[in-house]
Amino acid sequence: MKKTVIKKISIVVLLVLLGVSSVVLADFIKKEKIRKAEEEAALRAKEEAERIAAEKEAVRLAEEEAKRKAEEDRRTRNPLTGLSMKETAIGKRPVAFMVGNTPPARPQWGMDDVNYAPNIILEAEVEGGITRTMWLFADMTSLPELIGPMRSARPPYVRFSELFDAIYVHWGQSDSAGSYIGASDVIARDGVDNINQIQYRGQVELFGRNRERDVAIEHTGVVYTKNLVQAINEYGYRTDRDDSRFTFFEFTDEAEKMSDKVCNELTITISSRSWVKHWTYSSSDHLYHTDDFENKLTRKNIIILYDETEYITKPGASFSYCNYRLEYGTGLLASEGTIKDISWSVEKGKLVLKDTDGEIISLNRGKTYIAWISSNLGGNVQID
Image (tube, rainbow, N blue to C red):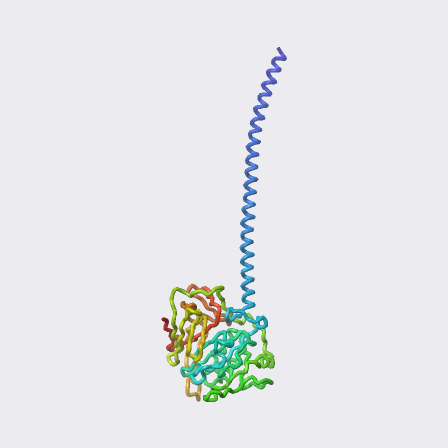
């Protein structure tokens, strides 16, 4: 009897224990499932975080590589055209030449597209409606044999050359008198590295006269460019470009239209006193053409800068000099047979070009003509 009771009690205890064990086991299994689910979720979260981090790193590396390539492209290409240039010219200062533009001065020596035409041609008014041009070359060792007719410096052109850290070459200069501040004082004030024919006493034949045309003597002055580098070295001028003082243009990888607005012809009037320039777009070569310099000149980009100007009459002069403000304004950019509105400003000594959304614009790779026109004295542009 006692054994039977004990057996029954044992069975009951065993059943209780088994019940407890099953509950514990079930709870254990449940917790284990939860733990494994949490581990799997944590692992998935870790893998997702690693994937996102890897993608971000890939993007960062791609951006760095693109930036590196862009910097390398900027470093190795002509900074004025975006085109290739000689390795020996990389990182070197450009040169700027002051060239006449009156009818007797045309066609100018060295402007043609066959032999090292200027990377940038800037045209602006000097005085009495007369315009002159300033030519910028990024490579001082790749120049046309002759450049001219060379003319005297004016303050606006000197200041514009400074935007590109250029060595400024000219034949004379305007001097200050009365309220007029001449180029001589601007050059001295700003410490502009320049070569002036009137003052040049170097060891090489840098300047001369070309008398093959029956024109007045002021239209005969030329630069023999083969001797330019030696003359620059005689002055001891810095030849490495100071990027902190240089306007770097952005360039497109492939030629792009500027907008949906067609621009097949441009008629540009510098001021109400000056003559006009006609540019015609050709879809065959994707360039703008003009005969108004009395040669066959083409440009990839046409930039118009509207600026406020004033005429200042110097005591003793029979004409009024044209001064430009050179601070900010609106403008136009034509390329690929299209045109768009832009704005421009001078910021920290550099020329900044932006679109109407305030973004830095990119030029198409190639040579550029800049018309610096009067917004308040009759300058205008007609577009066809």
